[in-house]
Amino acid sequence: MRVVLLGPPGAGKGTQAKRLEASRGIRQLSTGDLLRSAVDEGTALGRKAASYMDAGRLVPDEVMLGLIRDVLPTGAYRDGFLLDGFPRTVEQARGLDRLLDEAGAGLDAVLSLEIPDGELIRRLGNRRSCEACGEPYNLESRPPQADGVCDRCGGRLVQRDDDRPETVQRRLEVYHEQTEPVKAYYADRGLLTSVDGGRSVDAVGGDLERALRHPGE
Ligand code: AP5
Image (cartoon, rainbow, N blue to C red):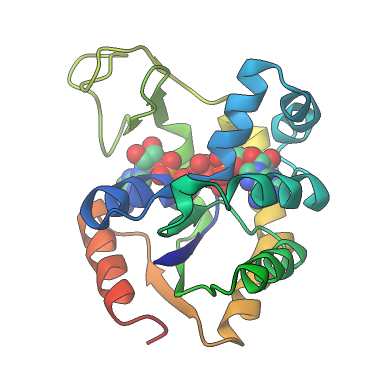
């Protein structure tokens, strides 16, 4: 399947994408993860993206569309993908459509996680992830068994730089201004299903699974 997962910062896109990858074998493609790897490796893309990410702003559309154009056609995503964090503007959504049209393969579903800002701020403040394997944790809703240590691989748990309170506020503003209009773009095309993301990981995951069985309902 070819799926887009939309939602504000901290809505649980990464958590649910990994869950769907495990349960349905739909490969996650997270543009945030790609950009963070590029920053860590000090590539030209990473050097360009870092200042935008640190400020909680979006990396320019032409950079993101170039990245997706390079990555999406590779063999890893030939049998389908779940886009996590892309598209984030209507211009990116149009660019994705152009790319998929060229490949003769449209989207099957667009899922949107809905959740109030107050809950997002709490989740992001408590988020930690393993610097070795990327496993996500939350000090409130999914704490590790031992403080600061990944249950899965024993790696160190770290906080993302852009989860500082002032940057979170800016990311939420950017979401409401630039990414929310993407929902209408896909609703007009009959592809959008909205899911209440403010419940347990399992409850949200169950709804997403159902939505994928009956896309657009
Ligand atoms: P990106 O990495 O995509 O960040 P984001 O969209 O802000 O989303 P997050 O990763 O913060 O949250 P999430 O929804 O994945 O939630 P998670 O599952 O971790 O982008 C980062 C930056 O890169 C952007 O700001 C931008 O600069 C740049 N960028 C990326 N893509 C771009 C694009 N297309 N265009 C331009 N720029 C781009 O969950 C959050 C926490 O909550 C965790 O602790 C988790 O354990 C917990 N949690 C999850 N679900 C639940 C639940 N149901 N109940 C309780 N807790 C839960």
